[in-house]
Image (cartoon, rainbow, N blue to C red; front, side, top):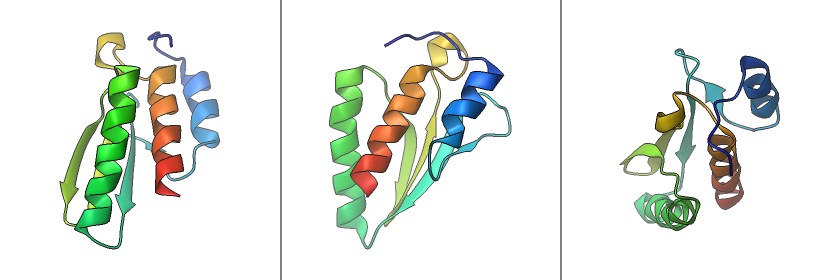
Length: 97
């Protein structure tokens, strides 16, 4: 998948079809918080996402506190958002549902 930085219009279009995610204040990343019933569910989600991210060679910036996983996505080497970020966000949404 391409690592070309998306235009503002392409970012807005991709974000419109992505439940739960929002554009960060800097306009160069997207973010979402996932809340689970407990730590075990949160950790299982992170493990599943980690395996998918590794296959994509695209890794999230994230943190976990008890049952909440906070995620920020961008493509560092492109200097902003790429199709990879939105693909990983969609994968996370599928795993969360």
